[in-house]
Length: 160
Ligand code: SF4
Ligand code: SF4
Image (spheres, rainbow, N blue to C red):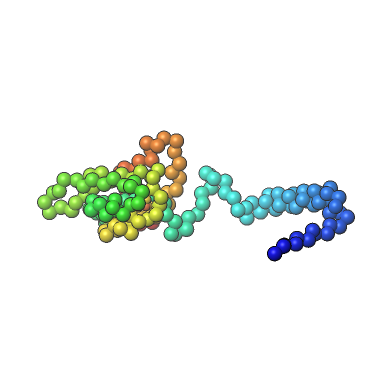
């Protein structure tokens, strides 16, 4: 079936492009003046001076959570490692102490590989990790700095 597209009829002002160009410039100047008068209504931010307000369910960089006594909640059970589809977690348990909770000797996140899926958080039976850190500025030229160690991941930030 043939589709017929009728050409729009242009009036004499539209045929003489100079008027349309002038109209476009007036619209642009109008937006420019509006931005000067009402800068708070601009959709853009002066990053990095101004930071974006994050939504409560925003997934930032993974962090390790602590209990009331300041100890890591993690028991090095490795369920998060098994759940991670990107193989970016490396967890090693510290030598067991009789009567004491297991703790991780090593908990590394390769954030360069992390896809921020949150499966590790869902897999953790102890609520020992979350992604509510509010940390999203992770760009770096040095790939070595994409490895976040236990100490870095345990730094407090954002809502617990
Ligand atoms: S958010 Fe996803 S990719 Fe990142 S560490 Fe957790 S499970 Fe792995
Ligand atoms: S973060 Fe949770 S799932 Fe991962 S090793 Fe620690 S306790 Fe286990």
